Length: 233
Image (cartoon, rainbow, N blue to C red; front, side):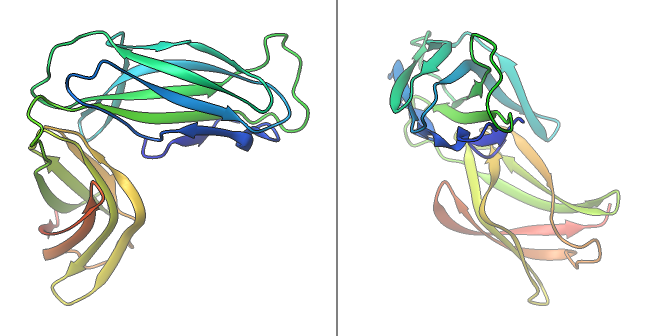
C-alpha cells in the first residue's frame, strides 16, 4: 500500500493517465480538496472512485469503506486529451486530536458499452493516501524500531506513538561490526499515528542483525538517525 499505482490486469495506453497530487494533506479546518486526472491518450478512460478509512492492525494495513470523506463524481469518464477533477469532501468539521488517514482508490473500469479494448486488457488502480492533520499543528511521529527473526526471516517492527504518520524512505541498517544493509533506496512504507507496522526485510536469512543496530532513514522527507535492537525470538 505504499505506492500510488498498482496493475490490475493495463490496456495499451493506460499509462497515459496522470494523477495529481499523489498525496493529499488537509489542515484540520479544511473541508474539501481535489484530485486532477488527466488523460493524455487517444481513447476515453473510465474509472470508479472509492474512499476507505486506513488503519493498521496486527502489524498490517487495514482498509474499511467509509462515508467520512465523499468523492464526487464516483464514476469517471475522461475523454481523450481531457482532464477531470475528483472533488473530495470531508463531512465532519470536528477537529481531530490525532491525524486521520484515508486511501482514495481509483480503478480503471471497462467502457460503458462493454466493447473489448484493443490490445492487452490491463487496467490500473491508483491508491492515493489522504491525511487530515490534527488540531495541534505541532504534531509529529515518534518512532521505536525493533528487528526480530520470524519463520527464518528477519522482520522489522516500527511503533509510532506520535500523533502524525511517518512516511519511511531511504532506509538503511548498520550492525555493530559496521555491516551495512540497504533496505529501501526509495519509499519503504508508512506507520500511521498511534499504530505499529511490520515488514519482512529483504535481507538474507543469515544476515547478522543481532544486537545494537544503527538506523538511517528519511521520515516525512527529513533525514533521521535512530537506533534499534535485533534479536532472535
